Amino acid sequence: MAEPLTILSMRDVQPALGFSPVYEFEDHLVRLMSAELVVPTARPDWQQRFLRGPARFRVSPMLLDRQPEPGGTLLVCAPTPMHLAGLASIKGWRAGYRKVVAFIIDSYQIRNYNLPPCVAELDHLFTPILEDVELLEQKTGVPTSLLPFGADALVQGTDRDATGRQIDVIGFGRQPEVYDQPLREVFNRPGSGRFYLHSTLDSPTPISRTDERTVFWKTLRRANLSLAFCTLSYYQRKIPVSIITPRWFESLNAGCIVIGKRPQTPLADQLLGWEDATIDLPDEGGDIAGFVEGLLGQTDRLDAARRRSRQQFLKRHDIRYRIAQVLDTVEHPHSDTLAQELAQLRAAAEAYDPRLDLEMADQT
Image (cartoon, rainbow, N blue to C red; front, side, top):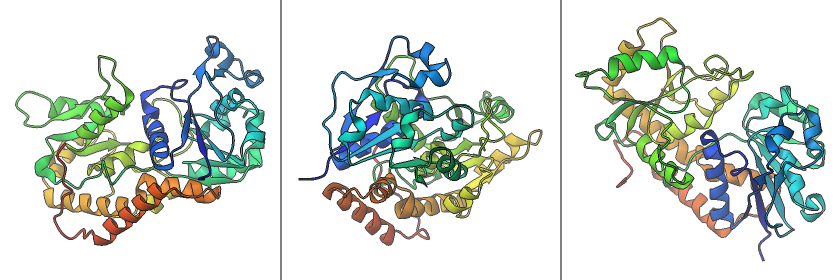
């Protein structure tokens, strides 16, 4: 009998659109590993408890309608360090599992908040932020590993060339106004012949997260360029570190060329080291729209960059590689399904030749 894997998800406690890639990661774990997904809900007074400072960790702000089966590995996917307090919703969580580990997404927030006491009892921590690996170990005494984001290259990835991309530029989520506004004014004026889609891709009518992500991926695969900016300098709220956020991986996996400002972290060279993985826009005050217009005319350059990205995702940035990393770190065996799809990825990467004008079949 396979060793059980349980995922403690915060998708109902923190349903923000920006954390959808995290919940998609959880869905992959459920499918690939037959993991049990456990989803607590927030208490009615959660907001008040959440904002009261360190005392908020004395009782769990989250409730479960059922208790999960004990045994094996428990993985907590925590949007912020504070969400680790949700472990208290599982009765006897520490004694019930061989290993208990956590993937902390916005781990930079440990600079502003005290961590819940339960963190010291964890076996391992994961963070997508290189600069937080050592800091987390110092603050918690728990071994910590870097776990970058990734994307589904087998299902969602494509190197479709420019002729199949009707959206010239896409800017999803928050974007710096100094770059967003010039593109709106020039590209979306009547008669421009260009299309800049600036949207969170959220529907005015409530739809399921799965449906929203389906629309998101379909739209992204039809975009030529995608905006992304270093979190140190271009976000409305102050973020003290440079994060390679999911939008970089999602955009590149979908065959978009990422334009904006490259993340100011050594991790960018490790993860995004191929030619034209990112292209920097002019600094504020420069001819941003003119630069983008000129770039759109370099179709051979852009299509070659798409093929390089496609190869990189098949070789090392698919979400299955990230899942395998977590499992190997905590010595949890791979399922047959995961092993088969990892083999499929490696075979596709070996067969892929970025010098050829290849395009993944995409009927969506």
